[in-house]
Amino acid sequence: MISSPLIEKLIESLKCLPGVGSKSAQRMTLHLLERDRVAAKALSVALSQAADQVGNCTFCRILTEESICGICANPRRDKGSICVVESPADVYAIEHTGSYRGLYFVLMGHLSPIDGIGPAQLGLETLLARVMEENIAEVIIACNPTVEGDATSYYISEQLRETKAILSRIAHGVPVGGELEYVDGGTLTHAFAGRRPIEVEDNE
Amino acid sequence: MISSPLIEKLIESLKCLPGVGSKSAQRMTLHLLERDRVAAKALSVALSQAADQVGNCTFCRILTEESICGICANPRRDKGSICVVESPADVYAIEHTGSYRGLYFVLMGHLSPIDGIGPAQLGLETLLARVMEENIAEVIIACNPTVEGDATSYYISEQLRETKAILSRIAHGVPVGGELEYVDGGTLTHAFAGRRPIEVEDNE
Image (cartoon, rainbow over all chains, first blue to last red; front, side, top):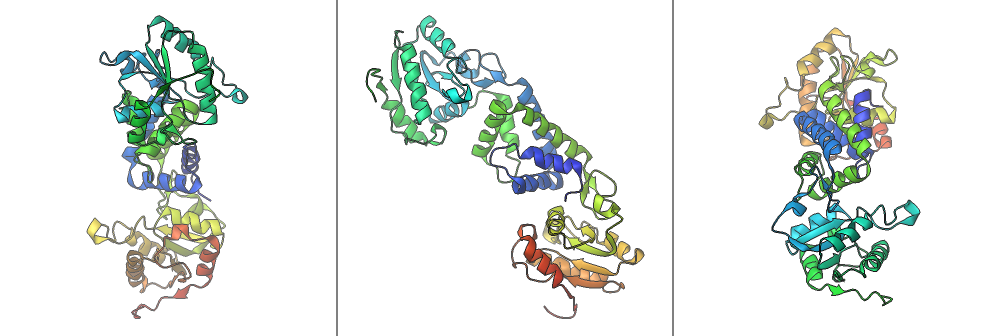
């Protein structure tokens, strides 16, 4: 239908983006080629650089091109507190509220044995080592309030119950079944303020 | 908020795509970096190659990396008929119906004096020269049925009335005020079948 292999390849490649189908990809391709080739080149460079250079922070596993991310390296952050989240997007959402000044630990997913994601893939040994060695006073678990997130939270709290750290989970002010990434700042702030200690024995 | 310049740059660059805002750009960035770096690299290469190598067909002005596009070079196309459209997306939509076997001329826009787009920018001299030199029997004008498209159609038919070619415009079976690119194939096929000669003198 489209008589240019390069254009077809670009349309096909754009479909790797979430939420982009054939029609959107075609529209994006023609927009870039007809009106904004400078932006297309800039996007090409940004994609290539990010894909090559972005790795994970040694401490918190968030995506960054440095070996230690800006949050972990920031001397003004509270080094006695770690907030455990599922993805970098959750960190961005929490940082956006400005209501938390501690450090993070990014699981990069949640426990999902059927997909081969176990404690090792989530870096839970690293987390346990950090909590024990760095004299962490509080661990706030902020996994998504979904079935998988609840299971992951429970597993982490089981792992950490022998440490000295106070364990808590952000309050269920956030809508259950939703994705943390999309909660508004006010709700997230309330969820942080209303966090409560985990009673591991409860069948909650 | 996001502690990585490369990630921020990628999010910013993705916002050049039509229909992509901050939240979608962030979601796309994290999807690519967390789950599909191979696709990110492939997209980077496709963008760069297309932006560098795709130009316009010498004959019909459609986007292509060759000097003559596949449609113009195809010996089985009817060389006596030219369909004038506003954009390459319109060609793709018409080709998709399979109801037209002639050639095209892509204006790459419509007359819009306020944006500095006049007959020269639309290549109308080239079109006129082609119609006269190549013994074109029929020119089908398929500009969008919008105010600008109507004005452009009228201007083109004025330019071509001295040539021997039969002028026609695709029937207004297509929804008025809409974009040709989004019309379903059946409607487009009917619009082609129901085309009628232009009576330049009418105030239609």
